[in-house]
Image 1 (cartoon, one colour):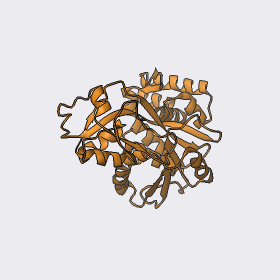
Image 2 (cartoon, rainbow, N blue to C red):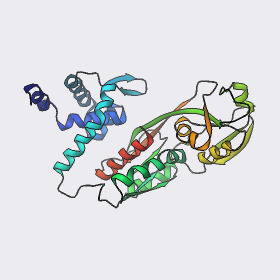
Image 3 (tube, rainbow, N blue to C red):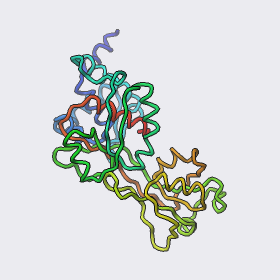
Image 4 (cartoon, rainbow, N blue to C red):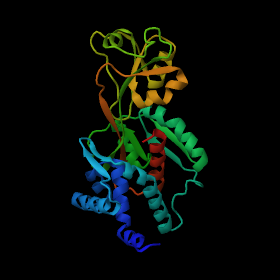
Length: 303
C-alpha cells in the first residue's frame, strides 16, 4: 500500500463515515447532528474534512436540503458496507445477522408505499435473509406513536410534520403526481393529456380511512368529472386498467405497476405538486436490525 493511501486512511475515521452516511440518508446537517449527538458546526466541519479527503464537493445545497453529487452516490454502498463491517468487528457476537435471523419487522406505512415496496422486499429478503419476515400496517400519525414508544414497531413511513419530542424524522423519498390510463384508451392514443381531457375524461380517486401520516391524495377540483372514489391506490389502478377512467397517482407507484396492469403513464397538463415522505423513529434507540431493515426498505423503494 502506498504512503498516499496510508495517509488517507489515517484521516478517515468512523465518525466521518457516520456523518457521510447520515447526510446521504437524510440530506440535512441538522438531522444528522441530532441522530449522532453532535452540533451542527461539528457536522459542517466533518463535511469539510470529507470534501478535502475525497476531493469532491459531495453535496450541493438545494432548497429541499443537501443533494449528493455523483461521487457521493458512488461512495454510498461502500460507505455503508464499511460501517456494517466495523459494527461486526466491534460486536460481542450478539449483533444482528440477517442471514440467520428469524425476526419479524413491524412498520407502519401508507398504502401506496406498501404497494411500492412489498414485492421488492419479499424478493430481496428471500436471498439475504430467508428467515426474516415483515408486517405492514396503516396507522394514523397519532396511532403511530404508541407502538413506536412501546417498541412494537421499528419505524413508520408517512407524510409527517415536524419531529415530536422523543422521535426523529428523516427523509425517505420525494414524489410527484402523474396520470394513468389503460394503454389502449380510445381518447389517449397519442399519449398526450390536455387540461380539458384531464378534467372531463372521468377520474377514479383513491382515499383511505386510515393512512400513515398525512395522506398523499389529490382532491377533486371544480368542474372535474369523478367516476368513483375507492379505498386504496391499487384498487384505483385496477379499475382504471379495465375502464375509460383515469387516475391521478404518485409517479413512483405508477412506474412500478404500469406495465403489469397494461397502463400508460401520462404527464399532467400542469406543473405537478411534489410531496415528501419521511421515516419516523424513536430517538436514542440503537437497533442494528432496524437499521439494516430500513436499508432494505429503501432499496426496495429504489431510493
